[in-house]
Length: 70
Image (cartoon, rainbow, N blue to C red):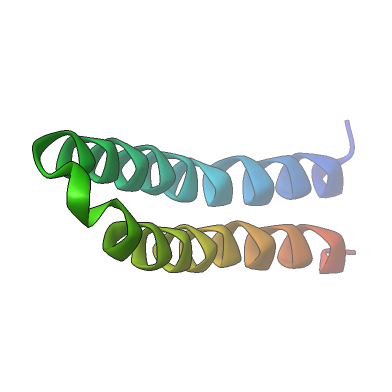
């Protein structure tokens, strides 16, 4: 068994768990906030999208690391 493939799989697998949990929590809290205060939906949307983009950046870094493992 090639250990390089295992390392790549672990890098992307472990590196994507955190962002997946973060994006789920960001979305849940945003929906909860909009549910409590529907008039603030416009104010909540942009920060929610920015936070989700930053969380996804971590997954992209993990993907880059997985591709760079030789």
